[in-house]
Length: 50
Image 1: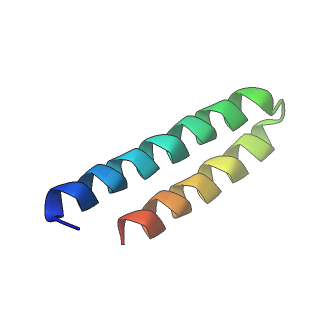
Image 2: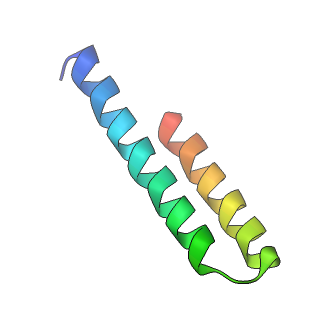
Image 3: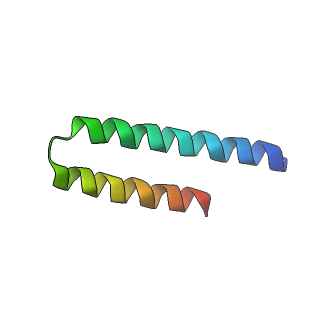
């Protein structure tokens, strides 16, 4: 896998995680749960980047 392909894959995974986070945030009524989802999705983004 070349460097360009790996960057493309990384961007695709990040976009999927961010879209999922926004979708879950819209579905959850409680602000406490929204904060929890934001934290978990932020951790997932950090893990994917590392």
